[in-house]
Length: 115
Image 1 (cartoon, rainbow, N blue to C red):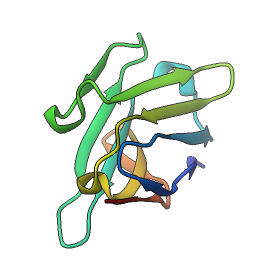
Image 2 (spheres, rainbow, N blue to C red):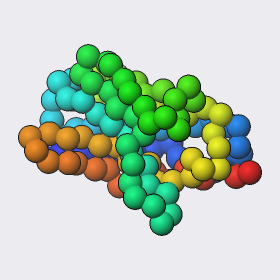
Image 3 (tube, helix red, strand yellow):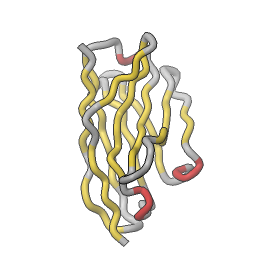
């Protein structure tokens, strides 16, 4: 079955960096688009970044120029490099696969940015 396991979250000061990883299994990773979402306390889950099987990317405006999504098909892993972090980036970050009409989610990894 599909499994998505996020890692790399933690506590960082404003201006710092983190790299999130999502290890995927249970499906053919290389032919599927992947995404990173986040959910801050009291807010709805939102799409942060998306990468297609052809490595085309798009980002929510709030993270453009600071975050970079990438994928390594040999390792079945998608990454989110987060630089110049701000307190408003504090959230649980989730890896996402949308496949055959269904959304699949990992359990998430918490990112806390202190001011």
